[in-house]
Image (cartoon, rainbow, N blue to C red; front, top):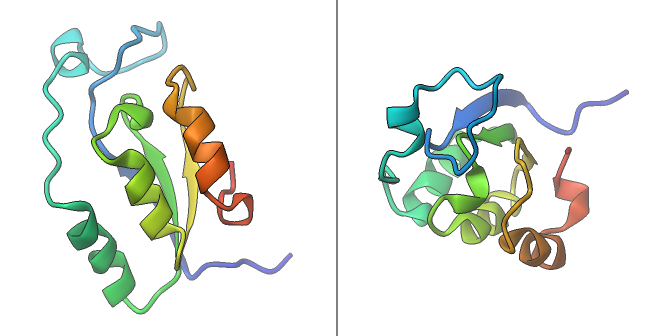
Length: 108
């Protein structure tokens, strides 16, 4: 099988999560932490685009769908890269994601 990417990485967007799963390794204080993105979406995507590589990014957290501007981040990332998402899919944003993001650019 041919890979459709040059490099693969796990990207933990945050620790914040609305669940308290038994298997989670984050302490409660981090699960309830305020979400503080390190940079605007455009700047984050530019980092990956400027690398000259096609990335396969595993977006995880906490709960990625609660990350600010998550759908826009996914939309911009999937213009040049592949993504996968680790989620409990409890957010209404999941339906928007399905309507917005090309499934050919989402691994799982």
